[in-house]
Length: 382
Image (cartoon, rainbow, N blue to C red; front, side, top):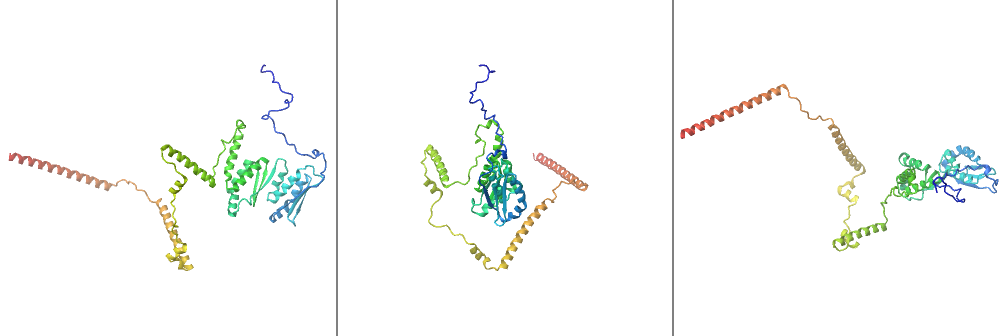
């Protein structure tokens, strides 16, 4: 069979295309002509409450909400007495899924999303998710810290999440409102819930950045990405995990001891080496009141205590100012320089050199005289 000839294809598979080369299906908008059944048999409606502080804003923008829903054939009402919003289908409604989109719209408006952003939920390619985070952390201070961690300094973390997931994220009270593609909503939910479980969002952001870069390479489309993704180890281990690690360390230690010909150790031996049990309790540390009684501070009056604290504070301030002043003064201390000698110094040095030379010559002359005298005395004796 030559290369020019086409490969025989079964008639059943002739219409099929290769998945890698296939183009995604285009999602056409749902038009009134697509609803061939006509008007709905029953009316569907949804209602939601909104907080008091949103009342003024909703009253101002309700006309824009009404106009956006009228194009889809959905009726909406704002009840300021009971503090609720409701949407319902009408005879003009042609898209059966649009009532659910309208329900999501009023939910987002109640949670603090601006009307210009909330109206985008009516598009087919945008979904929404409201993540409840109020019951995930008991301690209020800890809850506020972890919620702030989602936003980050000057909103930098929130901006990074929005850029990587192509979503709109709003942190409001005890909920997080998210709008965007359905696949990205899962990523944002995972980041938010992990953040409330004390896992910093930066780890997930880093993972998303790596995934985005890997998706650009067509060679890695059929491979596992686990080797590229970072693996973050937990610092806080359970009691069972700690004991398992301890047993592993002991086994490796015993294997090395056995190889060296030493006896094996048990967990009891290790515990006995570390801490020796004593039935007597440790010596009690003195209380703050006892220390005040010893120093006499306990018997001082309030104004005396204040005066004492002020004096100590002023003394510390004086010490610190003195240190700073000394540090500043070091910059203005002139370094030692080798100045050129003056004319008088040169003359004086020359005079001293000449005196030394004359003194040395005189010593040499006296030495030669003494040596001559010694030689004469020796000749006379002989």
